[in-house]
Length: 137
Image: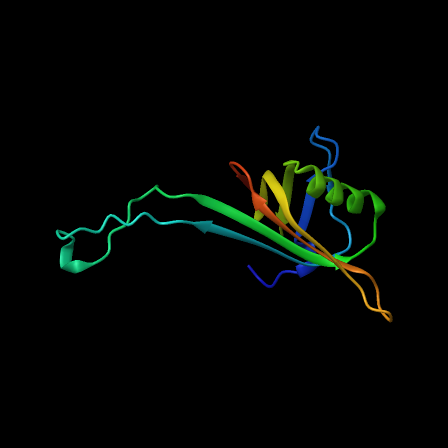
């Protein structure tokens, strides 16, 4: 797989609760990360004193972050509503030439900024709130 265009990594949100996804518009930079906690089961009998981990145990999580400029009133309003209402809708993350990650996420941070001689910007962070699915492209 060759180099990918960063603008093709898209974050989409279920706009109405019925599976109608819309791109969170205006994002210039996006990131998704996956994490898995490990469960240490090392004991005095562990071979050579090496740490042992329990396979399949621990908590899995994902986080999404993005930053950009205001471009679309509908998705801006939806992000604000999700944060203030504490809703946990489905999101999709389209990773070019890799696949689609989909599942429930909560908006955990929403930041707005601007300077007197520039555009208004925003940053948002999301945390997974349930099981995620992956569909290969």
